[in-house]
Amino acid sequence: MSNPLSEATVDALLDRLAEDDAFRTAFMANPKTATESLGTQDPGTATLPTAPIPRLASKDAIRRSRAALRQRLLAARAPFEPISFQLPE
Image (tube, rainbow, N blue to C red; front, side, top):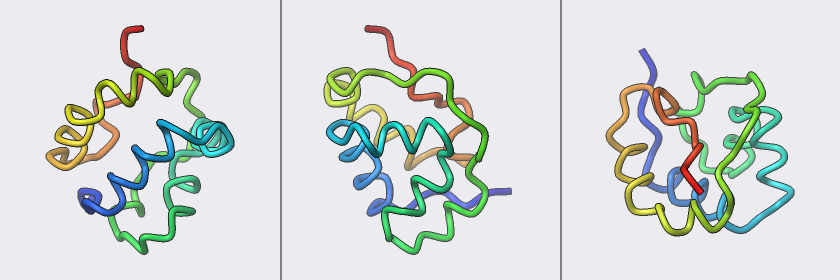
């Protein structure tokens, strides 16, 4: 069973996904490595997936849905299941 991500990690992750193109590219290539690069030393990142993500919601969609994404990530037992960061445009 995985640990949930900390609030600091979730906030940093959503900030970067909503603003940083290079981070978004790294996250799509390997979510675990990209999330660990945030430097939060969060044990919750240990079980994140390493497989590439084929599609990611736009920066604007993540900004608009930030509160809902944050709530779901903080409540998730396995942080990226079923959340896929794919939001309707």
